[in-house]
Amino acid sequence: MNRRDALKSTAMILGYAITGSAVTALMQSCGRGEKLSWTPQLLSQDQAKILAALVDRILPRTDTPGALDVGTDEFIDKILVSAFPEKIQKGFASGLDSFNTTAKSLQGKDFTKLDNSKKDEVIKHFEEKSEALPGALWAYNFAEGDEFPFYRMMKELALLGYFHSEKIGTAYLAYDPIPGPFKGCIDYSDVGKAWTE
Image (tube, rainbow, N blue to C red; front, side, top):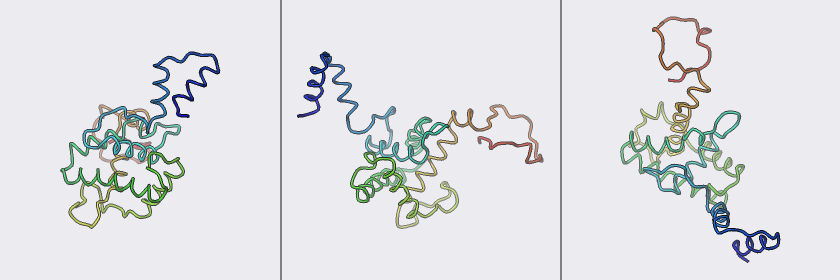
């Protein structure tokens, strides 16, 4: 029995009439992965879903917003298009595909279909395997090295997008949209919590 027949049978047993739109909504909710709330400029839909699942595990929602709550995945896609050359854009996109291939070989499923503990195991594998970028991402020479540093680049862009988002900058970090005069020498105790750049 397929899903549609099961839904119809269940409705008949309960004595309810299911409308076509209700069945459609139920069928779509059982679809392959969640739909994106944004349209990727660089990444394919599947790559964008992998990225969304990845940043959601790195910066999940707790008592503060998660990466997806502030659009970190969309930020990464946009900054790749606007600030990086085509070679790096292609390297990042193929890095997402390689990441998913590794997830399949380690856990037997696409990264987006894994439960959170299995996703964490894949991320741990990349944490242990990936070397740190030398210095800042912006100073890294992508022409050097045998392998594109996808994981470290993705993680740095995720942190950049998250902590520079309006919601995190204004609600969770100290934020002053119109700073006062420059004071070159102040006591550290006067600064308080970290400031949004």
